[in-house]
Image (cartoon, rainbow, N blue to C red; front, side, top):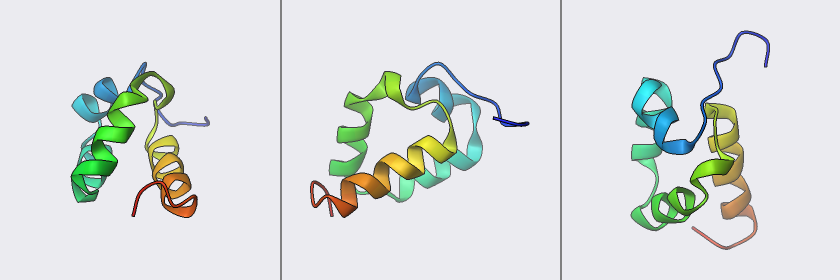
Length: 62
């Protein structure tokens, strides 16, 4: 993780990392809901962006 803070869950990440919060707010409400259901799996902005990209690429979310 070389210098990047990792948080316990998405909720913690969004509360503590302004960049992650701002990115999350650009996502559709449906994508936000899906990601919140996976709360414990996302602890960094990179993980958040990767998971959102995966959902888009797999056609689960647009």
